[in-house]
Length: 498
Image (cartoon, rainbow, N blue to C red):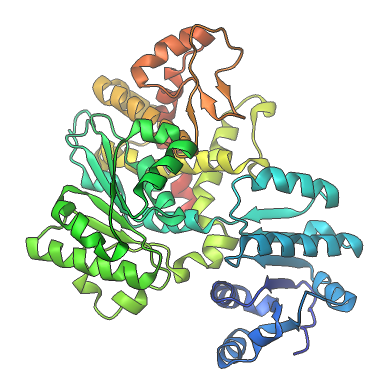
């Protein structure tokens, strides 16, 4: 098939590899940008010969640039692709090494042809933990001006769960003090990158004053999973109350969890395939339905849940599936980056409140860790409002009134500050950080970013001695973040209504 000719003021979307995930995203592109964009797929010849491709191409107008063997795009093909006013390249298949290889093939070609690099956006799913440092080295070799957006699908899937499930809705609190009256209990059946990211997202939103975060893991390789989490997330396992139970097989997972099912507020399931996860989900739902339990939620990771639940969703009232391809591979999630949009607005608010321009941070220049920190603040805002009471919050008209409201309720204010500290700790712990022990030493800084250690990762009541060691009031950081709950809410709310 001949490649598309680019119109004036054009947007070109180029997908490297013809895979279901790319086709789903391209469908979203065609609905959102079809009038002013072209869609092109680069991939092996055999991928463009079936009925699936022909039907997809007819719906979206997608063209094919097939090759046989190794990629051998001609200079003419490359110049045509690069001639668009704006080009979005997608390297989002499940082969992480191939994604990186293809992305740098395209970047090398752009440099060789001396095209305007600033107009390209590269969407990559590398699935490498040290990808940022690697990218910086390679970008220096080619050009630092490439706009590279890293896409972590396990994390995007976790965001789809966080929109459906919030721990604050399943815990009872004292209305006057926001003190939790019970622990938060989570089970994970099958530890995978998907279930781990979902667990961490829930953990960041489920740490409350007066409540322990209790985790039960059921896995065929529970010892190995524990060792992995201990090595990569030591602070997390120190903060939660965790137990790991070995099961004989994922097929028998129901036998292990059914007797304890109603002990949990949330059960996250990922058995490696939609069919296996669906089978366990149906078994668990049957038990909950028979007991009349509406408190426990089952959250299976499923890329195509409609195959199992669409015909009779009313039969699965306890199920909140996450990771659906139709929810994750969309313009909204990947191109518009909507799951992190709240973080952008939080960062903009922080910048607006700083008098020193040197302390302001540009969102595009921030690390993934820094961006995630702002997203965590934005996502927790609705939890704070629920703890304060939506009716109480609705009566507050401005920031000064909100601060006065807090000062008039010292126990509430103190507990919200403690909860903010728990949230901050949970974000760092689930990012691989641990406490930096002082051991009587005099340290120049309160953290060691290279080793992911921070002195403030201690219980709230121990922050005083950390403040003394560094001559800075660290409790004030938590109370300051409570003081701006109203401002953050107004910032996020105004953006949603635009």
